[in-house]
Length: 148
Image (cartoon, rainbow, N blue to C red; front, side):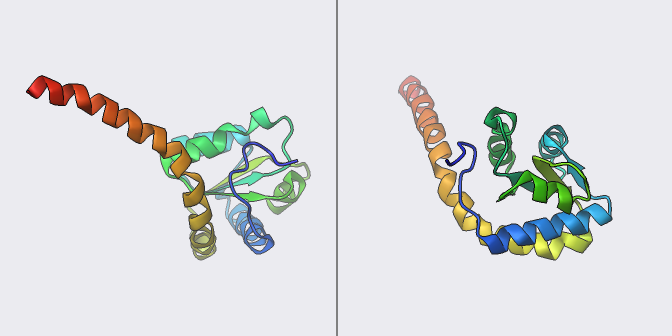
């Protein structure tokens, strides 16, 4: 069953590259581990890439991260399991989300990941942007009527 917070599918190649970027960044202490730390990193504008596990239960724990990333225009990608994500970060326990912060060693790999997911993420985001455009139009009509 597909999770409600998973907005697009990620190929195995891209998810492997994301896990490799987490491995490289964790060696240089450039990651924030866990949902709370990843959320703070995105809100502060420090994250280069947020890696989210697809098998998180309950879904409510993590479903806010893609929305915050869309609002802050931060990049995010999904990996199949939280066990693999935790292992890539050097943890002995599963991890639901990791934010990769400024890490020059992983920057080229992150840019490659972002270029491959940008089309998929862009296809998912217009749904969220459409109501905002309608609201702007509604607010602009009364101002135009006042000017007459």
